[in-house]
Every structure is written in C-alpha cells, then in structure tokens.
Amino acid sequence: MMIIATFNINGIERRLPNLLDWLAARKPDVACLQELKADQGRFPEQELAAIGYKAVWRGQKTWNGVAILARGKTPVLTRDMLPGDTSETQARYIEAAVNGVLIASLYAPNGNPQPGPKFDYKLAWLERLRLHATALRKTGAPVVLAGDFNVVPTELDIYPTRSYADNALVQPESRAAFKRIVGRSWTDALRARFPEQRIYTFWDYKRLRWQRDAGLRIDHLLLSPSIRARFEDAGVDREVRGVEGASDHAPVWIRLG
Image (cartoon, rainbow, N blue to C red; front, side, top):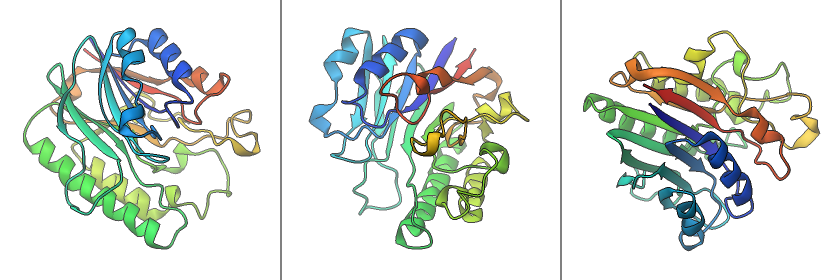
C-alpha cells in the first residue's frame, strides 16, 4: 500500500505546525507540497526529518516553491523545472522517484487577471505540462502528477456562484487545457472516486467561504495508465482546512495497492 498526497501549504514556515500535525495523523508515504513561499535555505528539513520525512524541494522567496516529502525514504530527484522554457525562473515543478513511482509536485500559474500576460503564461505553462506528461506516459513508467493545477475542471467542481465568472480558474481555455492534459490516458483520481459528488479542495479566506462550504476543486492527482490498476481510494482531509492558522487548501490523497 502507498498513500500519496498533495497539499498547497500556503507558506511552509508559517504553517509548519499544521503540516506536522497533518503528517502525523495521515502518515502519507509521499506528500507533495506547493506554495512554500520560502527561500531554498529556509525549508524546514530538520523538523521534517525528526518525524521521519526526507525531502527534495525548490524554494522561492515570497511566492511559489514546491517540494516532495517521503516517509522513511529519500526521494530521488529527477528534475526541478518543467521543460520547454529555458527562461523560466518560477519554482513551480519538481519531480522525483519514490518506491518505483515517478511523482511530480506542481503549482500551475493562477492566471489572473485575465485576459492578459498572466493568463497567457498560465495557458503556455499548462501546454508545457501536457507535453511533458505525454513524454512521461510514453515511457511506460508509473507516474502521478500531483498538485495545485489552478483549474476548476467543470461546474461540478465549484459551488453554485457567479462570483468567479471572470476568474482565470474557470475560463473555457483553462478547462480545455486541463482536459487536454488528462486526455484519454490519465485518470483524475478524485473524480474517479467521486464521479457525481461536489467535492472541494480550496476555500478562499474571504466572504466566509469556508463556513459556507463555498469551495473549489483545484488540487488534483492524475494517474498514468501504468499505475491505474493500483488505485484503491482517494479523499480530501477537509478538517485540516478548519483548524486555526490553516492554509486555504485542504490536503488531497490517494491510496495505491
């Protein structure tokens, strides 16, 4: 059995106690983190090692930052940048092998405001992800793409509202880009487990959205065909979003046999 999780921590230094509590409770074998918001040298390597987790990470001051933690194992880093743009400076992608599975932790661009250069960057980044995902899939290796894709795939993945109508996360172009990544080969694990249920992973701090359960599903785990048969279960640790000092995201996890 192997539990792989993704968690947009929204500032690892500020929310380290929350992260340590969740790791102790869930005990994922692998945890992919996004939005570290910390320089490379400020990653809490020792605190995580003290509870049995080794890590690879790419930090960035103020914004972005991604990491992969493994319990009782050392992740084998395979790349720390999404290919396709040699001028890329944003820490949004890291990839490592753990227990024979190739795992990516990714933080796709938000894209707001749209239209504009930030939205163009988002769509270009997602296309680069699609091309790389296809290359990984064609190797035949078991692959999990995990992270904050910053895309609400369908209307089932957002609470009934018009307030997000102009948001980059729900635009037809964003949804089409995500759909192209998934294609006919990848499995959207959470939606496979809950095909008809409104299930959310993110609740904005504003307008009492957590209290009203006004959420979005933007954190996803995609499974390559070679690992699909091992998929047993998936879920969202909603209660983590409700604790004091919480990230605005909740962890999402899958269980592989």
